[in-house]
Image (cartoon, rainbow, N blue to C red):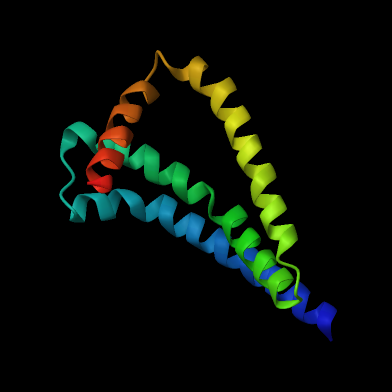
Length: 121
């Protein structure tokens, strides 16, 4: 019974993540137009949100898996997984970011930093 519930939750998170990814990918231009995003940043916002929505499947899988492990009383393993993901993210950031510095992504960093500064008050 437990195995069936685990399999069902994994399939739900896979299906939900894939559905959110597809909806986000195709509806992002429409949503940005509804929000009246200026033309100067429209391409950057579209690119950013599409990259964000590509991460829906892994995020849904992690959240469902972490919830299952915590329900079983194991709160250490989700923390260890997050730690390894943080290290992997830092490695990707250090390897990929310098290669993209001269292109379009450099301007995205300006807008991201501006948003972080304005959000932090």
